[in-house]
Image 1 (spheres, rainbow, N blue to C red):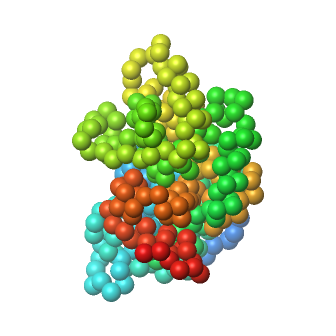
Image 2: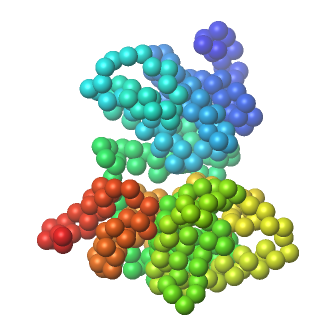
Image 3: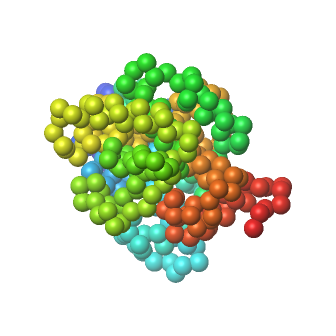
Length: 355
């Protein structure tokens, strides 16, 4: 190991700088875990965490576009930790050099939960360290750790109960700060997620042209392909809930006005663009908007990410009985009834479940 080769120099080492985390992440992490993690790890533990961090670096570099520990968001970390869980324990034991995301990688031996949770704590400390040094704006592990630790097995379904749902709607419609363009965008995005049940990725790729407002119900066209290669035959539509239509129409009018003098480029046609780049809003950006809103209202749930809004939309539609299961599945882009039945069961927990 790098530090083991320089035992006399370790006390002269400073915490890794930003460029080291980006360009030499393995070296930076070894310095961090041995000297700046706030805990004295045994050599065996340090080696294990360094080996796992090497897997994380490989995972980050394989993403498109490539990422690093200063840019990865909650979704990316959740995907990595899910991959790290390993193979079905009933599968044959075999050596594997699979890369994250491959089919065979998902069949590796299950990592012991205790080891995984310790590694989650290490990554949480690392992200806090990066925030403290100004290399990140927030710690994405706050959401990821909760989702991984509590969402064992099939994954946890978390939604807002009816009164919490109404509280959030009132806040977004009546009290949310829309004195700035950023505030208007954030409110429209929150209402879009809460009022349609679309995924964060679908919100990120939404164009101003994907909304249909005419004499019928307001709809959003969900395209499976990227907007620059969209195929209008490969789509499904989502009906916007009545409470979210007017604010979203107002926001899209502002977006279209801003586009009048600009070229018809991919990034500039986005409905909910990044304020900084005018490109796609990041996963971390969406999580931050949702989490901040929940914290403002004191909504204490097991998850504080955008999935809660999707499940809340599902709960609301199931409770109302407005759509058939097949229509609701089509709106949500679900291929099976598995998730819908789980949400239905939780919605009517303790009651007689309608059939």
